[in-house]
Image (tube, rainbow, N blue to C red; front, side, top):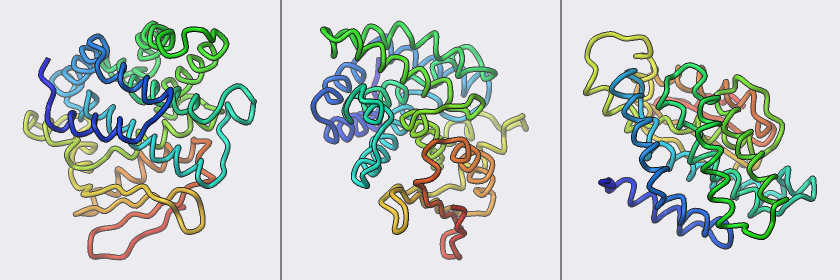
Length: 267
């Protein structure tokens, strides 16, 4: 399968950010042929059949990068993960579960949009099981915990199902933050006739940049810069909805605005 320059760049950035168990897991995830094939087909169905935006290899890598950034910011602010609080694992274990959820959360788009988060869980389950056995071969209890945590992150990423762990909350927000205009580029070119879901493409196409960094008052600051006001749809109807249902909400500052104009603070 052909890997795009964008994917290669993201792969390098992901591996550079990780160490220990998460690095080993990332090496396997990024090179796994079944995962790659499933991501590709999910994207084909999303874009060509349904007319939605990117839900494939690039999107899932961007979500993974977003999630790594958020996890590190929370750690640096002294916020423990759910695994740490429950004394079931350490930060790297939590990060491993978040990585799996990030990289597999949209596999269900290969079946259809409706309930795709539920379809993603049973498609991802055997993959999660297989990969965790490679990284944690001698720790059944750890594999069980991480598998459950990853599945929670996948099933909760659309904000339709209540999640409870901080790790799953990170997935919700990391997914919502992938809204820059490149994600809408292909469907904008392929689909010219009006369709249900067009507002997502047009609003995403107006988002110029999403920045995730340390906040001044709270651990995580998210800033969305857009070229036109249609981008506020993406912020208010997608990202803000996901943050509202996320266990990460108490730790987030959210700003958005048209470039050159005044920033609006939501959180």
